[in-house]
Length: 245
Image: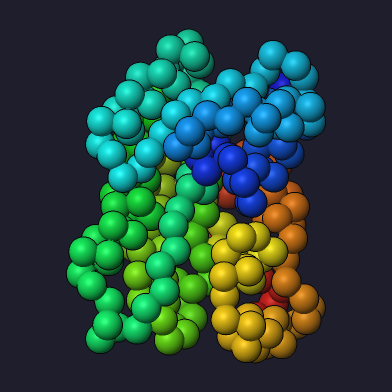
């Protein structure tokens, strides 16, 4: 499905990002796996899902502008200046009530979940527009729409990113680049374990399917958006939340 395609996945060292990287590799993509510190064990786990030699690690710290610039250059070199898929999955969470949230912490969360992602996408989207093709997949969250107490920083940053995706889709479509957003609901990752149990169970109970998502549920949708099966899909926010209504 993705043979001869080059896919960049951020936050590929664990959780949803790791599962997406493994899934894209399993369907033939060459994966450039971005993480703060390149972990050879993680790279091997991605490579084992696909073909040996088609997975490479890229160091990326979205809080550091210099790191983002260096990653863009490295990705351009490793890909031969052509990438087909960009999955902006990396992110950080920070709980805290509105009146107690330090503005410095709010800025840090936005640096990772919004500004860093924007800077990376600006650089890598130029490789796509040059070849007039590509799929950008931004990972947001249903927290962008569901305003639970203590989700100011995370929810607002994800809402901003989802809105930015609409602008990206509008502006890049004429150059053949599609941009879509996946908004996962409660998903079994490290963040799942950090949630307050009562809030977690309340959200699951509010869903039609009455269960949390597995990372593979999100990865399957990413695979669809990365492939030609979604060739006429852009500017969309796909909620993968088990029917939270």
